[in-house]
Image (cartoon, helix red, strand yellow):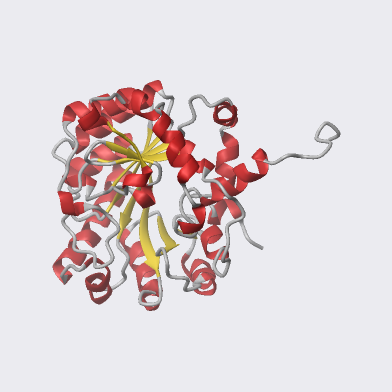
Length: 344
């Protein structure tokens, strides 16, 4: 029998229903933000062949911009910040300061990193300030790491050592941070799934996490269940974005609007707000350019441009099983008319 709590601990459709006040704001067109992805920098120390970041322009948030963003997120009553990229967040010169500031502003912090630049000082800051930390390894062997990250064996070994470092820091500090190692599944990577899980457990990670690479519908659920049964125990979990794998083979979305963009957004390293992290740097999804327009986050978020992006977004052209997909499915049902709703 499927255990929803174990398998859908992230990106679950039920999450949006735990923010009833935000839903009330949404239907009243007020403060709605729940989670914001924040790109501190576009600089990166990996060479992933299928990179979905925007490291080409080399942009990086200034400290004043980070302060302004943190203040704005607090005023908008945003609840979670995913520090990601863009590029590699650990490369920002004030990475630790940024975590401390966001946490002191009332945010829960998630961190996605390739793990190569991790050191003891950063690990301790992550253990102190973050709710979750995911290292994207995407390999169980140096050969696969070369394919997925475009990096040599010494880098693979370095990241493995850094996984051990983080696990030890978490243990020594008694930190509640959820520490996982991620793996993007696809036709070329499925053969490395077991080696990856075994490596994660050996290195002391709390969980090995599978999710599909966008556009690759290789179904790995059978292998996932086998690996979960073989390697999972009280101290180590094998988890997956099962709701995404379930959508494989579905050619159409059950919703016509991206209502999720009101609850989840992205702020890029050049201080721009976009309607969706999958469309960062695409002009038609630009909500506001705080740097060039000299606007605060609150001013940019409340602008009419946000509604223009909403009205003009054709979800049929969006990537399948995107971050907002599960939210949109729930919101579509909430927005629909219900016959005789008074008679429950």
